[in-house]
Image (cartoon, rainbow, N blue to C red):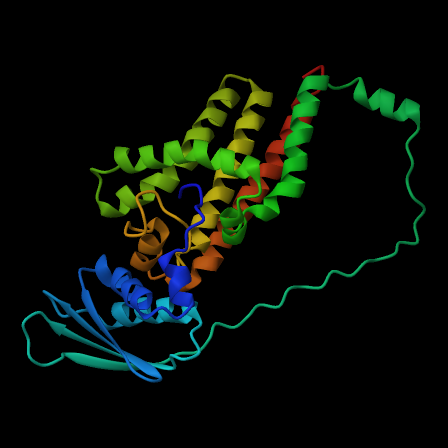
Amino acid sequence: MTQPDRLPTIKQLAKQGDRTAIAQLISQAVAHKRMSATVAFFDSHLEVHLEATVTPNQHVATTLIQRELVSLRQATITTVIISGRQSGAEQHDWVKELQLAAEPSVAKPVRRSRRSGKRPFTLTFNDVRRLLIQFNPLKAGFIGLLALYAVFGASNYTVDGFLEGSDRVMMFLHGVNLIFHEAGHTILAGFGRFLHILGGSLMQVMVPAVIAGYFVVTRQMYAGAIALCWTAQNLWDVSIYINDAQERSLPLLGGEGVLHDWHFLLLDLNLLAQAQLVGGIAFFLGSVLYLTAIAGGIYYARVEG
């Protein structure tokens, strides 16, 4: 992922009904499976003809194309006919007709306020003073800022939040994390395609995790807690990428023609349909790790620690 630009993407053009963009998206969706696609548009349906040196896998091809078209939410396209054949063959080896349905919308929960009958707890000045003198002010202040960032910034770690780019802390940290992400691709390039692709997200999480581990081993516990916060933030960052596996609306380093890491990984694992679940798990693990780091940071910010 890179910093978002303001130019309309192919995905945006396709959602507006641009036929050239729709055809290009379908071609990109199957290109990494070494399939070529020819798209023909009609009144209420379109036809996609696939060719490859080996007969295209029907399940993989239809899944890729269906996910791409459903995400566009084009009401004018209700039916798609997909056919596959080996390059050079005169007859199609298989034909599949799909009826498209819009993805169900998810209702947002309504927050209800609760009135408590309990009397409010109040602190006296002496209570606050006795509490504060137990902590190193610099350490406590910094871990407090990290805690506040979790409260007000964690909700920005979504695809829309990233594209908006209003969270400057998130965008700055993403730029730092991106260095390790790209290094991971390079370092694991010789270990097979799956690890090569996974290496980006893996490395950006492992680097701060190793740093945190080093501080813990050397008994620098407060520093370890800070590094653990960074590790958790990287899991949040990766969760954005995972959640975008189906839509693929994030701008990628190298342009729109490059491979989307998590689209490839989840497709290879037959988990593309569960992209939101996998992304949610990554975000949840990051949140648990972040809370653990904050608790540890507060504890080790004490003067006697």
